[in-house]
Image (cartoon, rainbow, N blue to C red):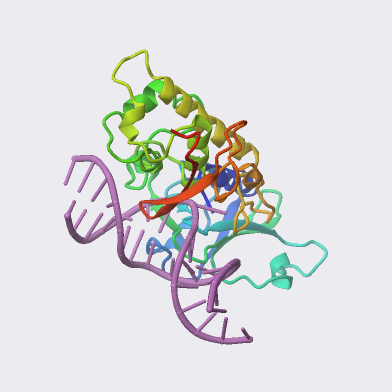
Length: 297
DNA sequence: AAGTGAACCTGAAGGC
DNA sequence: TGCCTTCAGGTTCACT
C-alpha cells in the first residue's frame, strides 16, 4: 500500500484517536514481522500516554510521554484500522468481531481516551514486510532506519537546484535515483512514474543527464522538482491511492488512483494533450515502470 | 563505490 | 474446479 501520501493519510487517521490516549494494553500476536519485535514490546508500551503521531518519509513516528519512541513501517501491505466500542452493545464487544474475521492482525493497541472512551488500533499486514521498532527520543534522528533518509518531497525544500545537485553525476536510471530514499525520502513506484510523466522525462535516461553543472540552467530539474511536489501534494489531498488494500484507518478508500496518468495503464493512450502516444510498461531493477515513450524524453 | 537482482511473504488474478 | 505462473504500493542484502 504505502508511499508517502498513503502513510500521511494513515497518520492523519490515527492522530485524533491516538494523541492523548493511554495505552492500556498491547497484544503482540507473533514474534516478528519483517524484523523481530523489540524485547518486552508490549511491556514498554503499556501504561504510556501517546504524545504525538508523526511521519518521516514512509515511517510513522509515535512519541509517548517518555521513551521509547515507536517507529512503524507499513511495508507493502500493512494497514491500521481503528475500532470503537459500541455503546449500545455489551462492553468489550467491538465492531469487527461481529463482521469479518481478521487474518493477519498482528498487533492490537488497546487505548483509553481522556474522556474514557475505549478504542482499539489494529495493525494488519498479510505480507509482513512492515515492522515496528523502538528508538529513544534523543537518538531518533540518528536511528539506523532514519539517519540516511533524504529530503521530504513536501513543502518547498525540494527545488530544482537541490534536485540538480542530488542527481548530478549519477549513472543509474532516473527512475532508480528517484526511488533512492537517501536522495528523496517518500517516493515509491507509483509517484515516481507519475512525476516523470508530468515532467515529460524518460525514466530510462541517466539520472545525471537532467542535472547541469551550469548554475542557471537547471530547467529540467526545476520541472521535475515541481512535478514531484505537485503529485505528492495532490495525492495527499486525495487521501492516497487504494489499489489492492484499504488505505484509511476507517476502511474507506483513497481516490488518487483515479488520477493516474501512466501507472497501471499499459496500452492505454497518453493523457498529454496532442501526444498520441501509448503508455508502455518496462521493468527496471525488477519493478514495473509505466511511461509514454512518445512525450517522455 | 555504485548499480543490479534476488530475497523476504502472502494473496489475487489470469491462463490452461 | 483446480493448478500453475506472474505480479504487487518496500527495503535489505549479496553480488558484479
